[in-house]
Length: 180
Image (cartoon, rainbow, N blue to C red; front, side, top):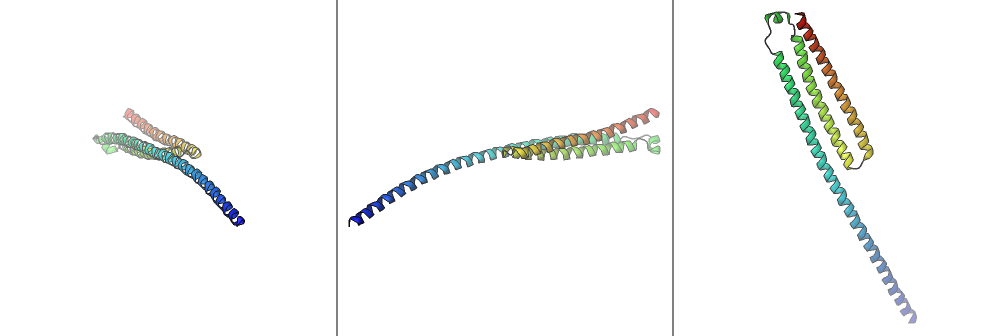
């Protein structure tokens, strides 16, 4: 009987110790869960803020693109107005100046399309950059910044080429006027 009582006491003490240890582990698990939830909530909040900023940046870029398109369309309209002026019978007969005006009109249209395309590309890259910065991805952000810089340089170079062609044509037009 003594052995049975000892066995029961040892079993009860063992159960009490194991339940106390389990309760301690359960409290630590709850603390870890709370910390994970706080971290997830903070990350979610940062992601939402980054998304809002990216949306605002996209809106600004779209406004810039629309404004640039409108400015260039105004230039095209001005070129059309110049090209649509009545020409004297001499110019109609020999067709002087008409080719230049058509070339200027085409270059203005090309400039509008190029500017719009480049603005859209830039806006898309800026959106990606904002998302990468929000995600704290410095490597991706660095790559996107380099790509953005190259895109801006190439777009500036394209527009300078178009303006150079335009200046050359205008110089030829002025030269023809002097010769008359």
